[in-house]
Length: 414
Ligand SMILES: [Zn+2]
Image: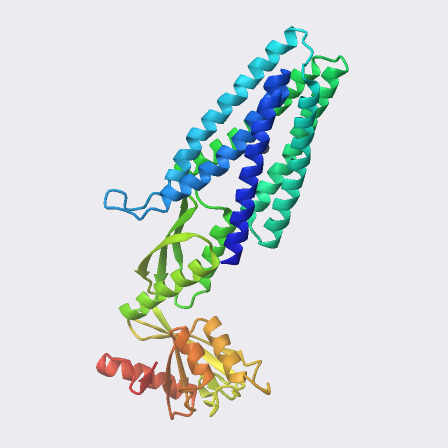
């Protein structure tokens, strides 16, 4: 809450000070006949309008979605910005025209002290304002305030050019005032172009930044139960992000699949800012096999002895069974690098098995309600107990069990 308040306060102070500068520059510019000062007044006004425009746009876009506008009014902000951008670019064009006219007529400024005062004030306040916004922006970690502070810092160059133009004109180099008018018009054009580019990008459903998109992909694939990510699309609307995800999963249970999508959505929303909606489409993914893991004491093929322990087992025998015809297809032995650990060996071993993408763990020792159980359960790995002594016997039992009744073997948990 404090963060919002400080951000807002800085933005409000900035708008107030900039509006004040715009007024005195316009006044002194008209009194003295300095096109550079008038141009800089327009420039400051531009900065004020774009700040206020964003606030107004946000107000409209905060409205609740209606039946006619089910996606809300987030884009209002961008439409407001689009109009502003055109107005700003037009103002820049007017400044250039007037400056070019002034080149052709030799004209000394009048009421020069006012002009110098206004230019000095503008330079001083712009400098102070940029330092203030950068300081608060960095302290509050607000990217928009930092960007705004950097903009204001660049504006000090415009203020310097204006001052130089007035002093130069006073010294007899009359062309320097319209010359700095043209320099200031570049700032106006730049501001207009920036706003135009951003609003068009969003209005055309541009995707979000590459970094966030990548992070969303990472979060999704790191979530247990997610298979292949078939597609990922995200678009921004106003300052909000809409995400569409298509993922595959081998989960068969509807409730589990639902939980999976909730989990992904929660993680994305907690890590990526301003996510309005995450739409997740789940497709069943059948890799055609069931992968089992059995802890064992040796690496001796089908003759290997099943270990009485889980975390302390020397090896894990991992084998795949074909889902449709229950054929045994592949077997390998994974050395358990955590067997001799003092603590958490069961947990680490469970994580290793999850990383190896197993579907089911068969043990002699019950791991129910122990930490490895929760790691496996979290990754949707089922666990099951056996009293058989060799890998060969376990595999035989699975084949018989499946062929016998068409159901999974008895005593299954998880
Ligand atoms: Zn500016």
